[in-house]
Length: 88
Image (cartoon, rainbow, N blue to C red; front, side, top):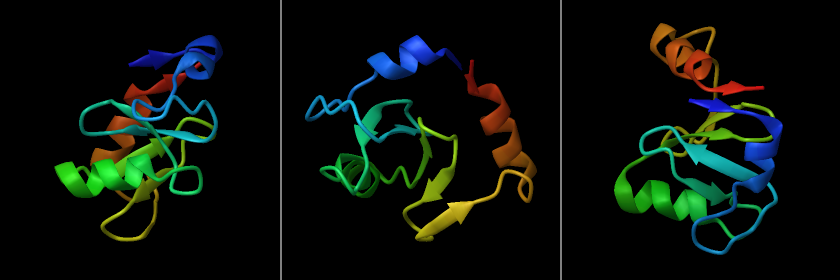
């Protein structure tokens, strides 16, 4: 999955169309706003049991189930996911 700056800027929350602070679900690749906007990624994660998402701003990875950031350098499977999503 390759996302250039223009594509990332165009992605909006699928529920409210917010263009700020959006996250990409790493299970289904849908885009939703952060819990600090309207919380649609959090709600999506709970509803569909998709706990891991990636910030479209800085590629940080959050686990809603663990309630913490995950490091792609600790988990080889996570490193594979992060490297497959390229923000150009």
